[in-house]
Structure formats: C-alpha cells, structure tokens
Image (cartoon, one colour):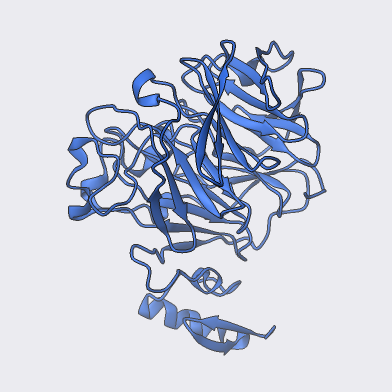
Length: 404
C-alpha cells in the first residue's frame, strides 16, 4: 500500500496525514511525524509483554546520508525516553547509563544499537534503550522499561537480580555482547547496584523478542567478584564463542554459546592491564584486542593463545583514552577506534600502526569514564554509530561507500 499508512491500527490515505496527526496529538497516541507516520507504527511494541515500552522518539531525518563523514542523527537523545521513577535515580539518574562505566552492543538482526548500564550507587534502573537504524525515520526507543516500585525494594542488599527476577542494574563495562546465532543480548559480571560495590560473576541473557531476562547459571568461569577483573568480552563469529581476558590473574577464557560453558584456555602473559579497556575481535586475523587506559594488547584466538602488549605507532591517543570506542570494520578489514571529537583511528594489525581520518561535525567530547561498546558498526547501514551521553543525539560515521 504505497499511498497509505497505518496509524494505531487504522489504514489511512497519505492525503489525510495532517488530519491523522491532529488526532494523534489530541489523543496522545504517539509522536507526530508525517514521514513514517508514527514511530510506533514502524516499531510496534510486542503485545502482552510485561514491562514492554511504547515510548519512542522519531527522528526528523529519513535516512543516514550516503556521503562520507559524521552525521548527527536528529532526535535520538535518550533523555527523552528515560524512566522517571524516583526510586531508581540513585546519585546520577539515567545519565549514568553512559557516564558510569557502561557500554552497549549492536543487534545485527534488527539493525539497532543497544545501550544499558548504571549500577553501584550511580543508577538503579535496568532499562534497555535502542536506536533503530532501519526505521524511517530513525527512532530511539525504550525497549525494556526499568523495574520499579516494590521490584527494586531490595536494592540496598546489592542484589544480582531484582525482586521481579530481572537482572539488576550495573556498570556493564565491556561486558555486553550480541549473539546472532541465538538472538540474545549477553552480559557478564559488572558492578551491581547498591552501596556494596560488589562485582558479579554471573552471565545473563536478554531475549529481544519476549523482552525477558534469564540468568544463565553457568559456573566455573572468571572470578571477577573475587579478583576484581573487569568484564572485557568480545564475540567471535567464526567460532560462535565469546572471549575474555581476566586481567588480574591473568587467564584467557572462552564462553561457548551452545552448550553454555566457560573454558579456561590457560594462563597468558600479563596483558590488558587497565581498569578501562574495550575489547574487540578481528575475525579474519583471529585476534582478540583490548585497548584503553594506557593498555593495548592482543591475544591469538588460535592455540596456544599467545598474548602480547602492543607498541602500535600512531595509536597513543587511542591507547591512553579510557575505554575508547573500538570495533572491527569488515569492509576495510581494520580495527577502527574513536577517542572523542572528529577523528577516528584506523588500526592495521599487519603493520601494527594507526592512521587517522578526520571529518567535521563529529561528537565534540567523550565520556571520561569510557565509551566501551557504545561505538559499534552496522553492517546493514554501512556506518559506525556512537552514543556519548543521554542528552545528546547519536552520531553515525560513514568511512566507506561499501557495506558488509
């Protein structure tokens, strides 16, 4: 129906768009915007799902430009959809989902960028946010609302889970991963909410279809709660596995997706020695990388899993930034890093060196406590996307005209 749109279940001719939008405004049925017509029509919330959110903010732009460089995606700040429940605000409010050592992931099945975080005393909300790149216009959605009320009354006990069974809020660091083979958002460890400052040793999975959390109860893995190692997980599409350095030991771990099982690949040389590191994998060269806070290291994904620290000429700014953006570019077959501002760093593992590319109009600052997984690549859109704080829009960066 190219000349029609669906508005809250009603099919209407586009010629009556202005009238439809007036009705939407009067009855508060959704955000107005004739291109689309409303974001809820493009991205309906699952029906009958407890905690599902219908709060969506529509962008004024229909698509990311095809030209190279930065693009600020209109109306994609998260503060417009932040939950307002007083009992979850902590000391930092929902801004702490980015300021408090927290990251994100990219859902390649739905072409959407995911963030969540908080933890400790900074923020007690466990909601999940999405920037939907395939929506037209692009939308920001509160994908899963925060637990609140009696569900979070146990927060002062520093719980692994809230009373409703959902995973509690936490500093997520570089512990968030999307697993495309099982369609799950995976999380390991992190600093749980409350006054204790405890680290978790558990893995959780979020089902983006049913919007439900499951504690995986997989034992025998990294002991972050005992030795203080911070999550530094990255997904390998070749082995369908997640790899992580337990940097305070140090051990190199593999998490098998099916069956769910941790495997200690053995002690390695001292690498990833920082409290603010971002992890990523080069699937072609079979390398795990960690970078940030003065550290830049690699571990081979092939036995005997040789580990080493990198000097990497031209990469000092990226290396010395707290948990910079760092991910794999499948088109250029390079690692791409972001340390704030207009410049990105292209790391070539073959020459162990960085070159830079600079475009105007990028994010002006970077969070002092780290970007972690909030800098991701979208294969479907052929762009990188970064979210830097809840009051600012997300940014897209196109480095090539190809997609993969």
